[in-house]
Length: 227
Ligand SMILES: [Cu+2]
Image 1 (cartoon, rainbow, N blue to C red):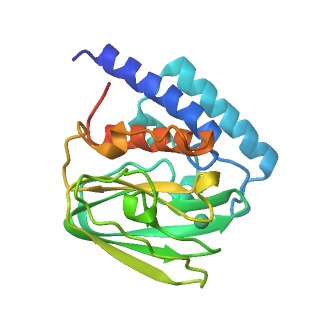
Image 2 (cartoon, rainbow, N blue to C red; image 1 turned 90 degrees about the vertical axis):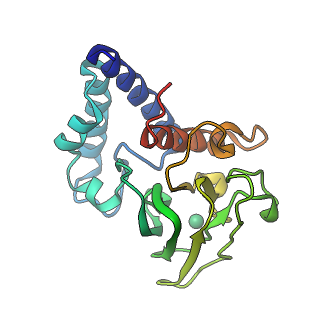
């Protein structure tokens, strides 16, 4: 594969995900954020400049990460690279000035691995897109469902162990419509045939669909599945 093709594809993906981020408002480009040490007007400028440079120079992801967006990324882990699977992972559930978030958006564990959901601030749940939760199936065929129920106490945790390889989307009951949705990848699944990646629930609000698209792009990238 030629380097040019690779770069162009990445550029397209970046452009696409930048658009999705704009809609979803919960990932990637810095937004006004109470935890940030950068004043809001500067943050806005920085975001605008980033968008510009992505389009013009087609930086690869790696380059973009090295250049960094400063401390904000470290705090939020938004523009995360999804690594190899591990035995355990932790996801924070956060309410802050920029909204409602699972952080990071995509975690990856081995088959039999455990994800701990940790309520850092606000009132949230971690709930699988599974028919058992009266939702469309955005988890692997045959996978177990889970639902933390509402966690309102700071520091409350919920664990789920994933025995079935594949891609799992899940949401926060109070904040789904606001885009509080994230993903667990289990093992080394083939991106083809994953319900999470292939079944877009068309009856969901636009904000939910755009968030799912954004997550699907991250997952496809992590699994080396390029269109
Ligand atoms: Cu929430």
